[in-house]
Image 1 (cartoon, chains in turn purple, yellow):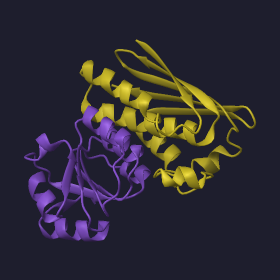
Image 2 (image 1 turned 30 degrees about the vertical axis):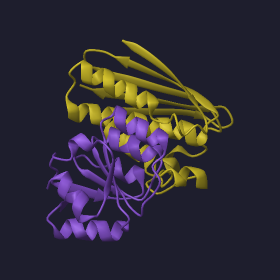
Image 3 (image 1 turned 90 degrees about the horizontal axis):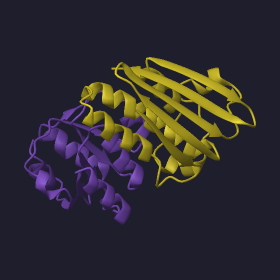
Image 4 (image 1 turned 45 degrees about the vertical axis):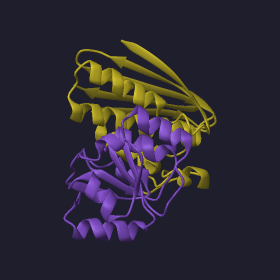
Amino acid sequence: MKLRDICSLTEGIVVSGESRLDDSVDFAFASDLMSDVLTIKKDHFLLITGLANIQSIRTAEMSDAPYLLLCRNKEVTDEMLELAREDNILIIKSKFSMFRCAGILFNAGLKPVY
Amino acid sequence: MRFEYKVEGGDFTQAGYAASQVKKNLKQLGVDSSVIKRVVVALYEAEVNIVAHAYRGVIYADIESSGIKLKLVDEGPGIPDVTRAMTKGFSTASPAVREMGFGAGMGLPNISENADSLLIETEVGKGTTLNIEIRF
């Protein structure tokens, strides 16, 4: 699924990494627990989270998950943006809840990691 | 190649800096991406542990042709019961650590799973040293 479509389906706005909107991704994982994200062996997946802090960006970087969908319109701080730009991580911000985002994207064909 | 990074306890903004730098170096050396991921996940979790539990620490990363040796030396409370600390789900993390998305008792088990070798030396009241080895 194109990241552009993910953004549109979740009525999101892109706050970082706009140049990656035409990338495609097949898998997603939704969690606020970064330790859980770090157990995933797969790379190149969309991280759906409500955790808006520097560690969610770091975790995406370490997990080779270059796309982050931030739910419930959480604030993206300047330090998050700086790190995301450095690592070329796409951040989409959606007003929808994590449950709703995950449901929409699952229905649209995005596959679960587990 | 040897790299050294200082880590301050409680400084969550910098947690992950060492793992990020090591990742860049390993990429430049052309190390397999699945091995890089194992290295940086183990290192990142260990780095977060220093920030979460210790007063300060130093990370030494030795990159050789056959693999990487990571040594994380911290000054901190130490681990009273290593077996318990290695148990999935056991955690002594503060609410501040949990707010950062950690502290669910998954760190040490995850480090162990990604490492080819993990040795924990600890002394209560003094600190902990983690020796992690991952072969390329």
